[in-house]
Amino acid sequence: MTLSRDYSRNMVTRMLTDHAERGGWELNRVRILPDGTRKVTLRRKIIRQRTDWISYYQGY
Image (tube, rainbow, N blue to C red; front, top):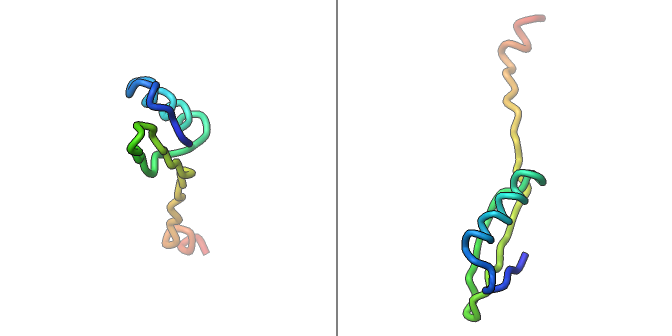
């Protein structure tokens, strides 16, 4: 996602927060280019489920 330098820091923060809450994304990297534009890289948030193998096998 590339954001113009015309957006304020607060506006960018709100936009990224909105993407994170609605789509399950998390911030990976923000690069500010020489012309002032921001190049934002998002990645899917991975929610790992913990498997408790000991309690699973104790039932058998």
